Length: 330
Image 1: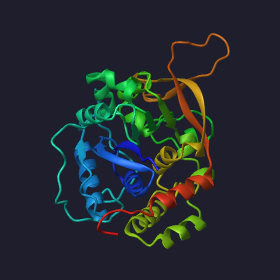
Image 2 (image 1 turned 30 degrees about the horizontal axis):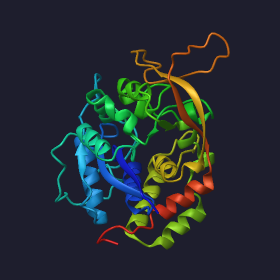
Image 3 (image 1 turned 45 degrees about the vertical axis):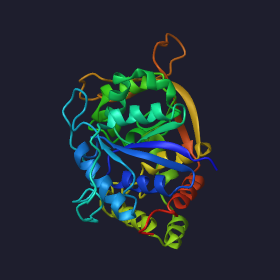
C-alpha cells in the first residue's frame, strides 16, 4: 500500500492531539511533519503540546515546526473551549526533551511540498495562518499540493452549523474566526480544497463515539487508544452544554483526519463561499454561501465541502488508525 504523505497543520488541544496519534498510527498515512498554529492556543503552546504527545507515543523522529503566535492582522482571541489545565485534557505529561525545529512552519510547508510535488496533502484542523503565509511567500506551491483538507466553516447543511457555532459570534466557526484573512487567502487561492464544517464535524447525530466503538478502542489496548478514551471522557465530562445537555463526546477534529484517510466516508458538494473579513461583530469569519439562483455573484470562489459523513465508517476508521504501530512506547 502506498502511504499518503501529509503535513498536519494543527493547534493541539485535545482533539488535535488525538488526530496526531491517528496520523502516526494509520498504515495509510506518512506524517512528514507537524506545523503548529495559533488557534486553541498560541503556536508556541501548540508546538509544546505536540512535542509532549510525540514523546508519550515514542515518535520523537517526527519534526514539529512552530508558526506565528498571532493571526495575520488581528489580535489573538482566547479559545472559550476547555482543553484542561495543561491543554491536553489534564494529562500533565513531563516537559519534552525534544524541541521544535528552527524553521518557521510556513517555510517548512513550502520546503516539503516542493520536495514531493503533487504528493503532499495538507490536513489542517486549525486556523490557516501558516498556510496563508506559505501561499503568500511562494504561490507556486499551490498547484503542487495534492489536496488541502480543512476543518472550517459553518455552511448550513444542518442546523448544527449554527446551533453549535464555535466562533465568538453567532455565525462563525472558530478556525475561520481566529484568522479570517488567512482563511480568505487559502479559500480563494484555487488550491484543491475540501472542507468539513460544523454542519458535519459538530453534528451529534453523526459523530458521537458510540458504545460499540468505545469497546473496540478498549480492545486495542495500546497507549494511543488509552489516551483517546481518556480524552473522550474528558470532553464528555467538561464541555456539555448545560441548558440542553447536548454535546459531542468525540474529538471533532478527528472527522477531518478520518476523511483524509478515507475520503469515501464523506459526501461533498461544490458551493461558492466567501469569508467575511469585515469587523462586523455579528458576522466576522462567517463562511457566506452564495446560493442564489438569480443575480448570483459568479466571482465568489468555489470550494468542495462535506454535506454528511458515514457515521459507522468514521468510527471504524477512528478505531483502526489508533491501533498503531507507533514507536517504542507501544
